[in-house]
Image (cartoon, rainbow, N blue to C red; front, side):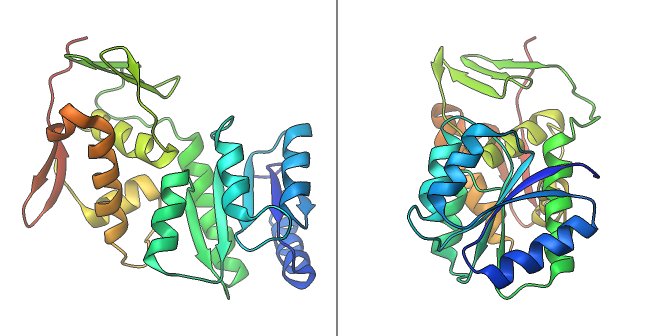
Length: 231
């Protein structure tokens, strides 16, 4: 992953310099911002492959930065946070955060999570169902444009919601445990926090509305996607 450009947004100089040095040693190209306003300015004027963003930053907080960027980009975002409460994670996932790491963290763990997020974002998959379009009655999913419509109405989804749905569509009729989904969609062992999967299944079902029943709960095992591809 040499040459990957990352915008690192962290107001604490000590942490920012430590993270920057470690990531540069891994071959990443790092640009820095010490507050949210600077981050938005740099993001608007440069091209990046990923954003590593602290939640508690001055001028414009991390949540607001994430919300603003998500209006125009699906760039992978990893949040740095001193808090690990479930509410914070759910709020971030709804905004489109790809992953979290809670302070204090080890540089090795941060690198592992960054690499996992980048692999997910670049991996087009090689599953049994590889069509670019999936259509079921009024539901249309365009894999390449990451666009979902229901009865020609655009459906807004977070990047992770779409990743999860895309994975299910490409592997439909197969049952996956929560652990398997964490490994396949999130890309690594997620600390045993299986509620993350349940939360995203709930969010995805809400987004699908009348088609929520396509996501089937297999009690005692996990989840699967049941639908015929009419294309």
